[in-house]
Image (cartoon, rainbow, N blue to C red):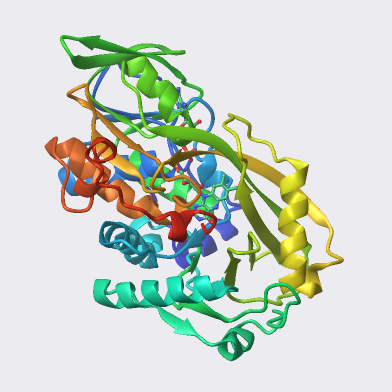
Length: 415
Ligand SMILES: Cc1cc2nc3c(=O)[nH]c(=O)nc-3n(C[C@H](O)[C@H](O)[C@H](O)COP(=O)(O)OP(=O)(O)OC[C@H]3O[C@@H](n4cnc5c(N)ncnc54)[C@H](O)[C@@H]3O)c2cc1C
C-alpha cells in the first residue's frame, strides 16, 4: 500500500495523478477462509481490521451484498460522543471515541475527525435532572462532560434561540471532545487497510444461506457461490434478524427506518453539534456548509431506506423553533437507513446458539460513533471465542437474564 502523504500528493500532481493505485482490491472469493465477516459496513470492516492488527488473523473475507459503506455507515449524520449513562456503554463508546482521535494516522487515511464538541440540550426540568445525572456518571467513568448553563450554550452556538416559546433552553450536557467524522472515509480507510493486509473485500456478494453441521457453521451460500470458513461474524445492522434466521436462531431486535436530510450549503454559522431531544431533532454543519439534520425513527418496523414526509415536517418544525435562522433554507437531499433496535437501546456483541457464529448488531440509531470500539471488541470475541471486558455485558442472553443496559435516555433519539 502506498503511503498517503503531502509528499505523495505533490509527486502525483507532477505526473497527472497517474500513479495512484486502487485503494482496495476486488478479488474473486476463495473457496475457504479462517473468518468470514458478513457486512462491509463500518462495524464489519473495523472487526476485520482489528482481527488482522491485534490478532494477526488475515485470512479473512468481508462479504457485502451491495457496496462497502452503502448501508447505515454511509447514511448517518456522523455524530461521535461517548456521554452514555451506564458503565458498559461509556466504556465501549469512550474506547471508540479515543480510537477516533488517532484513526487518520492509524489508517493513513484522513477520516476528517472533527472534535468540535457536542451538546445535548435540556429543554425540560426532567432533562436537566437526567443530564446532570449523566454528567456525574461520566465523571466517575472518566468521560469528560459537563452540564452547562443556557448562557454558555448561547456563547458556544450563537445561532441558537435559547428563549423558544414552547421549549426554552435550560442548559445542556456538553462533551467538548465529541464531534463528527467523514462517514464514507471511515469505511474506505478501514477497507484500504484490510485489503493491504491481504483480506478479501467482496462486494455485490449477498449471503443467502448459512451452512451448518453438528451445531457448527461450516460456510455460507452466496450469490457468488459456496464459501467455506472456520468462523463467521454477522455484522449486518438492519438485516441482523434475516441473517440470524438463516443461521437458525432468533434475535430480540427490530428493524426500522431512520432518516436524515441536508440543506443547501451556507456559509459557516455553527461549529458545534447540537441535539434537541425533547423537540426531536439535531443539527450540525458539514465541511461543505450543508446543515446536516436528523430526526426520529419510524414508529413501525420496515426495511425501507427512504424517508417519510411526516418525519421531515416534524423534525424541521422542531428545529426552526430552536434555530430560526434555518427557516428559509432549502432541503438538498433526504434519505433513510435501516436501523437495528434492541429493547434496551444497547448493542449486542455476542456468541450465539451456533458455536462459531458471532453477532454484532443492535447499534440502532447511534452506532457510527462506536465503530472503532465495536470492531476492537468484536475482533477479540471472534479471535478468542470469548468476549473481552468491552463486550461481555453486551451478550444476547442479557435479555433473558433481565440484565438490561438501559440507554433509552441517552440513545432513544440522540445519535
Ligand atoms: C439516518 C441515520 C442517522 C444516523 N446518525 C448517526 C449519528 O449521528 N451517529 C451515530 O453514531 N450513529 C448514527 N446512525 C447509526 C449508524 O449509522 C449505524 O449504527 C452504523 O452505521 C451501523 O453500522 P454497521 O456497520 O453495523 O451497519 P451498515 O453500515 O448498515 O452495514 C451493514 C452491511 O451489511 C450488508 N448486508 C446486509 N445483509 C447482507 C447479506 N445478506 N449479505 C451480505 N451483506 C449484507 C448491508 O448491505 C450493509 O452494507 C444513524 C443511522 C441512520 C440511518
